[in-house]
Length: 359
Ligand code: PEP
Ligand code: MN
Image (cartoon, rainbow, N blue to C red; front, top):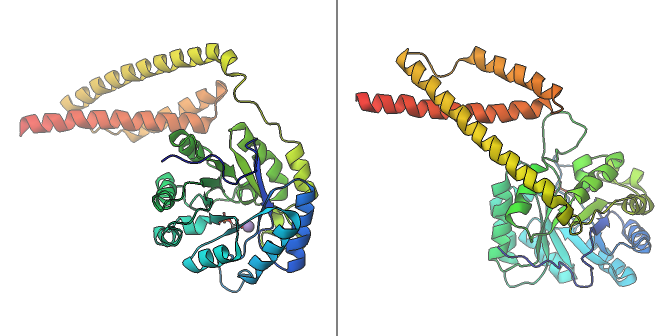
């Protein structure tokens, strides 16, 4: 897939591209007041949810189409581009009818191929930029599948929004960032614009600045941040919304590191990394050779491949050693688990081969 890098004309490609606005459009006054303040603070693209996916029925499920009218009025007044979330064919038709400039697919919808296909079919032949949030579950292929469905419908102005992944565990985040997932997506599609949603990752105002900075340091193209004229009175997601002035402060304090300039100075260090990776691979291959010899010994002595006690011991000892060497114990455990599983696979090949020869 090849993507167009400019999502909306006239928005310069300086990082970060900023989209801001309330979680939900609530009243005409709230839509307008928030838009005015954001426009005064230099924001060019407005967001507001008009149809709200709620975990349980009975909550505020959005104003629906009349809110699109308020947004278009705010566009007339401020000149900002307008964007909203769509989940069904009807949402798409309504948004297009009112003249909304950009659409996004929410995290719950992105997890459902039927819904994404319905949106894609409705958009066939329409030239409008679409942003696809990551599915709620950490499944990169499902996220890419959603992209492909829209791409195949002829949409070329595509981008993605990283909003974190749901977790049953209590963490400081509302949704775990799992940065490696958007990083892998970027590796596979280098021209795809990736926008971070620190509001839904953090779920709390005080985390937005830090997550935004991390996204910039990871070379994301933009940020989508929930901003409300009176956040404490918001009808949805109030803990994570900030005033337009607080948003401006967050944006003004971001450090945008230049990507081009430092590449040359880095070449020495990168050579070192290449060499170290090479040594690591050779060591791993050597470890696998020893592991195969152990497999052969276990075979000859009728021993099972897996000896849990020994494996436990290895994990605990090495994690502690790793920590003494300034690495996270968790990281060392993960690496060893991966190495161990490859060792077991290789020993299984030896056992199977011996069985085949016997048969
Ligand atoms: C939103 O953007 O307000 C929203 C509902 O987000 P998500 O789909 O990421 O939960
Ligand atoms: Mn929200």
